[in-house]
Length: 189
Image (tube, rainbow, N blue to C red; front, side, top):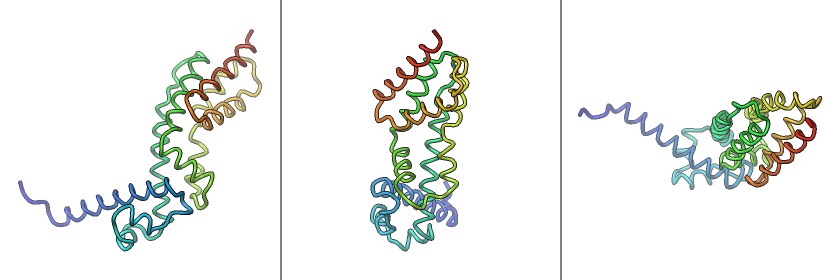
């Protein structure tokens, strides 16, 4: 086997180091939040120097933006997997609640949630994508709530998703589903 060309080897090493920095920064930002993190903390976490960090990222804001982007991409992927393939309101509510609860319990979700709600300096494109993260589920729920005669189906869909987003456990999510089911079953009788 021929040895790896020098330019390829350096590109691979640089890419690996960048990934190490992003992983370390992710842990630091998750632990300390965006505002209380520093390049020195990230360097220590990565067992690197600040010079190496600045060779990859000009400043903390650019590093944070890339970490936030990665968290959001992971969240969007998880949310996209939440099943919506049923016409039964009960099954739909349970499916969405279980799927979104699993996503909202991930470290990426909790870290990004904390950064958005307690930090400063979250880039506008990240905030806009965050606001749209449940749009597919919101649209599906609004359609499912409409046949029950609710003129506020969209509001109810948003309320359901907001409650699921704030649920701290699968048990709480289950209580939310039972509450909505009881409300909509009572309307259809």
